[in-house]
Structure formats: C-alpha cells, structure tokens
Image (cartoon, rainbow, N blue to C red; front, side, top):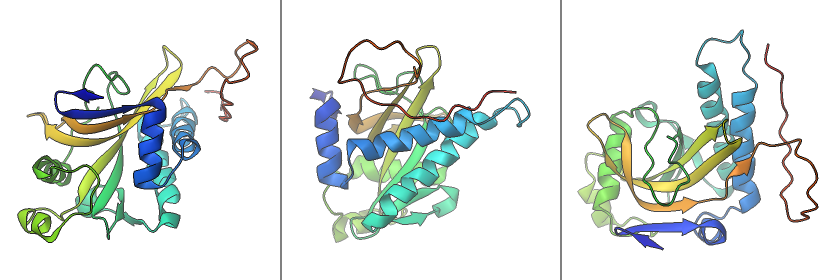
Length: 219
C-alpha cells in the first residue's frame, strides 16, 4: 500500500515484513506491547505524577532489547537515546509513545514528546536514504558524517484507555517538526491493536487472541 510515497504495511502483511526483515514474529511484538502496558498499569497513585508513561516506555525499551539481543543486536545509548542496534546492518530501533493517530493508516502519527539531537540527526540520515531495509553502504556512511550512520526505526505505541486498546507500529521516521517531534514516516508497519478488554463475555469466537496481562489495582 502506498500513501504519498510512503510505504504502509498493514496486518498480516506487516507481520510478514517484520519477520522477513527483522526476524521476529507477531507473538514477539505483541509481547513487547504487553510489557509496555504492564509497566503503565503497575503505577499507582503513590508514584510520582506522570510516571505511568515513563514506566511504560522504560519497560518497552527493556522488552525490545531482550527480544533483539539474542538475534545479535546490542543495547546502545548514543547521546542519551536508548535503543537496540544492529552494527552489521547499521540499523537501530528505539521505543517511543505516539499520539492518537498511532496505528491509523489514514493519518500520520507524531511522537508524543519532543526528541533530541540524536533523533534529529538520525531522521535527517533516514531522509537521505532511498532504501527501506538494505545494508547501509560506505557511501551512505560518508554522507552521514554528522551522524553515526544508523538508519533509525521507531517502535511507536499509544495506550488508548477510552477504547481499551494499545495501537502500535514499527516505522521509519523521515521528518521532524519545529517542535522537535517526528511528524512523517517513509515506511510504516502497522499491526492489529492489542485489546485490553480482559473480562469480556465469551462471544464464541475461537479466533479471538488470548490476552494475558497482569492487572495491578490502583491505590
């Protein structure tokens, strides 16, 4: 699916691309999302205000690293940007919360928070690339003298409590706003939302996914 020169992969196609290019499965990526929500939900009224978002992001970063390290990727923190990186392919993935358009193929989402110089440099490098997944060449590295030469992907998620779901995608940023938020993407892998409705009545749908998220009561 193409949208203004943007490659958008949906549902099963997104999972196929994820598996062929990153070597992980639908279950793998759903497990990361479950960890994100568990981190969000574990925060109580006694925690500092706003910590639920921070804890969700931190748990997502840990889960993403645990997923990719056995595949040969390494944890990395250039200029304070936590990510997991594949040095041979010159690719990196970082985790970020997104706005309500996350997971919506008809609108471009934005990162919820502003980003620093490392993200800005990586996005500028991404915008110079004409390829989505290939190994970065020496010419690419020479053109990226002001960056570390890694193509950056962002695992973007949005916890929607009103609709009781988490929407998420793995996307390649290509443009930032004056407010230092990512606002455009050259490629998006948009996955089916993860439902948070744990106690819904049995509808008899044997194809419904099993959701196993520990729920900690708020204080």
